[in-house]
Length: 66
Image (cartoon, rainbow, N blue to C red; front, side, top):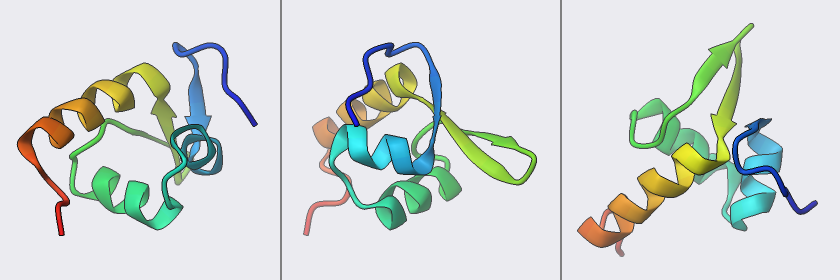
């Protein structure tokens, strides 16, 4: 599933598909407040644009390097 509108909020599954990253990894980043998320009725929602910015910053810092 390709996401076209980068300003929309999406569920974790769609976020993982969009970035081709594991859901568990993205959920962990959200729980550690390393990527922005909203908790809507006990379900996480994500801004594609906001997560992209946060991931770019994390990559520049080398967070998550093995």
